[in-house]
Amino acid sequence: QVQLVESGGGLVQAGGSLRLSCAASGRTFSNYEMGWFRQAPGKEREFVATINWTGGSTYYADSVKGRFTISRDNAKNTVYLQMNSLKPEDTAVYYCAARATRGSSWFASTYDYWGQGTQVTVSS
Image (cartoon, rainbow, N blue to C red; front, side, top):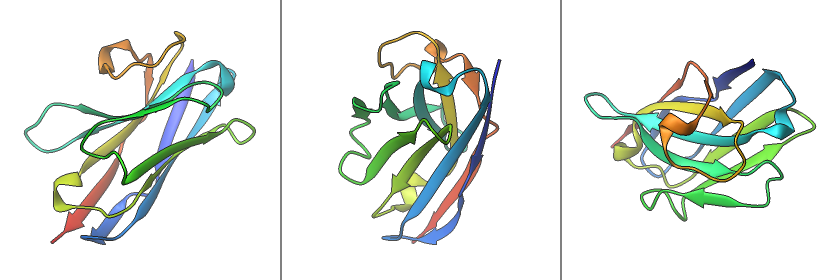
């Protein structure tokens, strides 16, 4: 079992920045591929970014590419999502997820463990 706890969400004006953190406990963190997803009201959960177990490979949704950066610190069992140039359409609950199977994936169904989510609200 892996427990994931997100933090860092909040209210920010358009154009601002936030950094989300996801602290993992339980199994060896470095064994897992990690991802960030988000879900806005009335919409399906969507992929945001993923990072492989070494941190050497990352992928982003087109909607956040160039604005968001995913990173991880395996010594601290933590994955981060740096969000810059935020837009009102980035408003959502953001979830981190862990995937035991090696290889990057942007499909939520392929992730094994999920955090409880953190709210990000971007005002115009």
